[in-house]
Length: 437
Ligand code: RAT
Ligand code: ZN
Image (cartoon, rainbow, N blue to C red; front, top):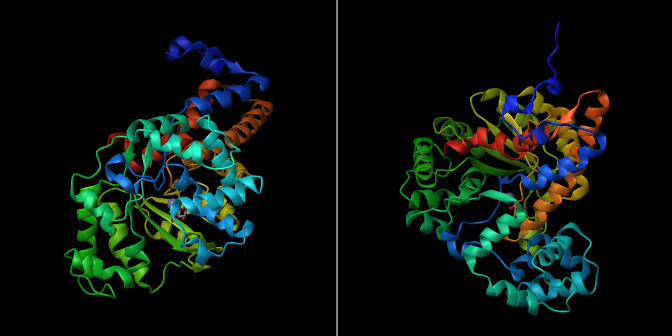
């Protein structure tokens, strides 16, 4: 019986470039992987960036880059400055202090400091200057819109997903005055203040005209659903999202669980939106250092198991903050096809950990997960964050395809293209219906 192998199918049969369908030798695999990674434009599925219409909410430039809370945490380890003193400084003075402590007096070898070096290098700026004059002058001279497009091109990203808080007055003003127009940006309905901060925020919903009470009792659930419906209509979010403490449990008697199961998940179903759960933060372990003061704790993933089983018609995007939870997350993804692991979040977004997590995910899930998001808060961060991701993925995928080749299955550039596209685009597009939008 004739066996049709991929070697016997001619490229012309499939209407593709002949070179893409050629079987790669072990030595050719690495450069093919690198080529595909650099030529595939990614979707950045979780950031804190904003489209131009959100004005000053969108952070950019050297002072914002240097005062990123990841770097603030490092400042207090390498400088005698006290947090109370630091918070009295102007933004430029803060950036100067960080530059001096972490880039002049020490080598910038941490992940976050190397990121700054990579950004300066990407724009041809000096990476070892004594002060920030040159960098400031450069960023100040960049026209907002053109700079934004240039940065996204440099990062190899063509779609950016924001984090949109419906209870932030600065944001609501934009949504109420025309909202999002930019086609490269997409909204996400972020529900932290509703889901875990209900006791301090329910009055904000009440002030927007929703009849809710402190215990989310009576008709509150219907009113929260009305609130969600209104914001879905306004934002057209790709998904709804919340970050949760390491102590999150499901089921339990909390208001968080009540709102999640009786309002948010039913609304996700109604509007056919996935729910993103980012689990494992320990809020304000050290409040003196503000945004940098959150920590991490190992969570109990039985909560995710119970949610995936109890809500089979819902889709869950899940990222865990603790390294100790990563393997279990893969196991649960093998049990529940309505669970999509994504990204290496925050303290996980370091080269060594990304490599470990990504290898584990490929071994357990093939290409059925989303390897990374940038979590960028300042525009230019996408340059180094996505560059690092591509470098790590090149190593991991290169090894994976070489092993496959050694096992006896030939690999083509086309296979690699399809897989990289699935990891960094299609999985997300299919879960959110992005291409339909
Ligand atoms: O990574 C971060 O910048 C964190 O502060 C958080 O914003 C986290 O990513 C989140 O979305 O809650
Ligand atoms: Zn984030």
